[in-house]
Figure 1 (cartoon, one colour):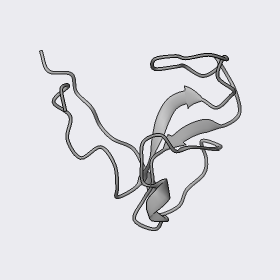
Figure 2 (figure 1 turned 30 degrees about the vertical axis):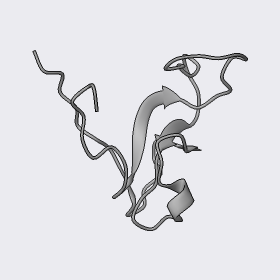
Figure 3 (figure 1 turned 135 degrees about the vertical axis):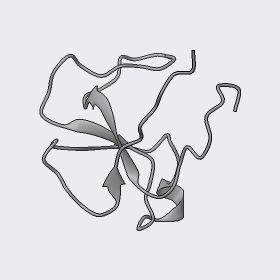
Figure 4 (figure 1 turned 180 degrees about the vertical axis):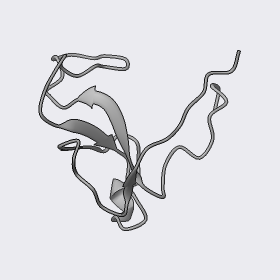
Length: 80
């Protein structure tokens, strides 16, 4: 894509840094969740998901202690 990122979905649901909560009403670009919370956001779908869940717009939430074999994270480095 235009940001130089590749293979953004599939394999595992990905942990996000955002706490889970409702977004503000209206159109937003890259909305952030609340400052604190109980559950973290998981995005996308994994190898064990239905095809319609394998897209970055899918937003799930679990406690940070949640573990299962199709949940992981992506290591990202910004090119300089």
